[in-house]
Image (cartoon, rainbow, N blue to C red):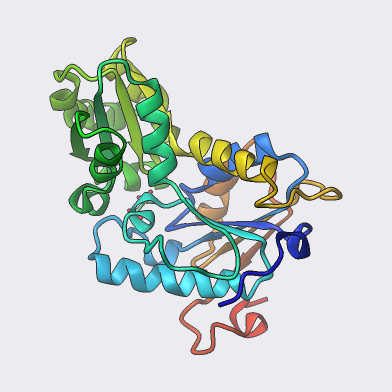
Amino acid sequence: MMFLEASDRAEFPIAVFDSGVGGLTVLKSLAEDFPKENFLYLGDSARLPYGTKSPLTIRHYVEQNIQFLLSCKVKAIVVACNSASSVLDLERKIAVPLYEVIGPGARTAYKISQTLSIGVIATRATVNRGAYVRALHELDPRTKVFQQACPLLVPLVEEGWVQDPLTNLVIHRYLSPIATQEIDTLILGCTHYPILKESIAKVMGGGVTLVDSGKAISAEIMSDMNEGKLKGNPAGSGEIEILNTDLDQHIQFTAERILHPFKAAKFTHVNLTASDISNLDQIRNF
Ligand code: DGL
């Protein structure tokens, strides 16, 4: 596919997608840092979780999401989902810049770490792919990486059990082994985990810095905008539109809570299993 001039797309929204509402933590960071940009968010709640599925299945979902978002006239696509980012073919070119979260998260953690002992908590898919381990070892082969899959945290966040004794217990159980390692930096390698930051920080203690992929990807996009690789929107109003493949009251409520104080202008249900995903009107179920 041909690359279009970035300037052709300056006023188009930046698309962000995730397997569910967790990626709104990434969108929130972007909205804070780019107040003039408009955003189009796609949450694939109908197929959540991605983190328990095989790379082949996740890759198929990612492909559908990318094709769909390209048909929505966006100027960049941010793959906020770590599980999806871990299976992405970064060599593949599409018509707009494609951002993922593993590289920026690893680079941020590497910059922060003094001891080169870094922890990663993520879904089973991301841990099994070893995506962060690879990215950190590419930066410096001496880096010691301690991974821990925390699959139960995603449904707890989706359930809205954030400040909850049961969630704290689960966090404690998952993090205890990693907390005994001499790490000074912990990558929150799943979009849902920044929502549990306070409880995670309590278990890890003050000597460990938590790295959030939302902030990391925001810095990367800022640098691309400064270098003219991605044009900023001179006339945008910071509008946020949310599309979801399984929109109901609970999902909308959870999304609003994560996004607060930002507000979505519109929520729309989309059906990505429609046979012709290149036709937007056919997909959006108004
Ligand atoms: N959004 C996913 C990630 O960041 C977590 C949820 C899932 O398993 O789909 O890896």
